[in-house]
Amino acid sequence: MQRAFDLDVDNCKGCTNCMRKCPTEAIRVVNNKAIINDDKCIHCGECIRVCPYNAYHAISDKIQKINKEKFSVAIPSIAVYGQFHLGTEVCKIHHALLALGFDYVYDETWGAELAAKALMKKLNESKTPKPAINSNCPAVVRLIKVKYPSLMDHILEIQTPMEISAILARRKIKEIFGLEGNEIEVYYISPCPAKSISVHRPIGTNHSNINKIISLKEIYGDLVREMKIKKELCTSTPSKTGLKWVLSGGQCEAACIENSIAVSGLENVMNILDEIEIGKLDHIDFIELMSCNESCVGGPFNFENPFVAKNNINYIIKNTENSLILNDDLDKFEQLYDEGFFDSDIKLIRDHQSHHTSLKEAIKKLEEVEKVYHSLPKLDCGSCGAPTCRALAEDIIDGLKTIDECVILKVKNNGSKS
Image (cartoon, rainbow, N blue to C red; front, side, top):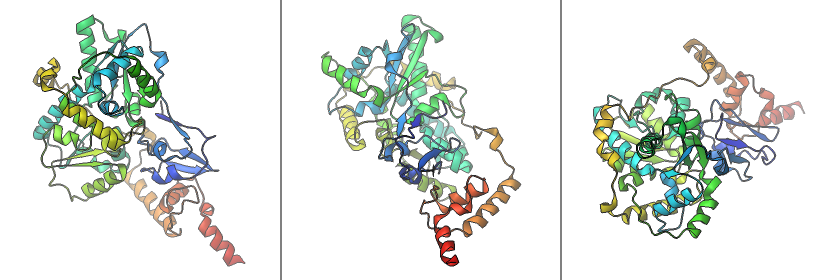
């Protein structure tokens, strides 16, 4: 899988909304159609969010194709819990997933609580330069890799709640049912394309413990229908600490990190990364960066307004009884930590090695780009199909466009001739 979403060129009108909002300038408009540079795409989903013509669609595994010959495990993103009306119990969502054909549901909030414990401990032990940056938002990690490679060392390498939950779910199935690796298939119900691509093209780790990804949009209607049909009495038993993880500031709170900042939304994230890069924030211990507004509850595959979803999750937190929260995995935290269970390995390695250039070549290219850029009008009008004049200059040096494609220069040149 190259991307976790697809572009329907028939629906694309070349309006440039996606091009202008793309944080890594991965999109161009050519012949009134958007074109995506997969080397620059960080799968943040901004293009999906802003397209007025629904030209972008999630690439998702289908619920109808659950392999009945294997034991299927569903791990719904914690953000899923905020997508239904106020007061919807977590266990009702789990029952609905079972009704759709899954054999078992593992609650990601428990993986998130363990991740929070590991975050707290690793932050105290790590020699990561300040401020340390969270590693659980794949879009942010890819953004740093593409646009801020000098900050890669600031990323605190910890397994995500998604991966932690997948491993623990597999262990639980083996313990309860005696089933081994290939007999189990793990599905993640995803709120965003970044988490989807992190399964198929993970950064750093050799492989994901998730087998398949289902977009929440793919099954949302089915879940609502099953919850209306099923009337089982149940009591929610998620981790109250883990529930906070998908809310902006939730990781800082769950890990009890006082000297910290929480930032959500890509524009805000890039502003903070700019400040980290020039050394303005080295007095901060930890910065939680999430690409979606309000964190994972704002994912582009979600249905509910992120502020409403946040309120729904806070309601669950307030109404979950402490006496019902039991999970033996939490008791194994120290043992798991000592085994290196929570360690991740995010390295500064490009997906395509052929794109590596020497420092001398990079400086020469930068000088050439600057020369072309100074000859352009610097209006960033986007009429040429590039998001900015500097992006057009880069495209010209890369041989993708010519300076004749600048509409403003063309008008000026034609005016001077007449």
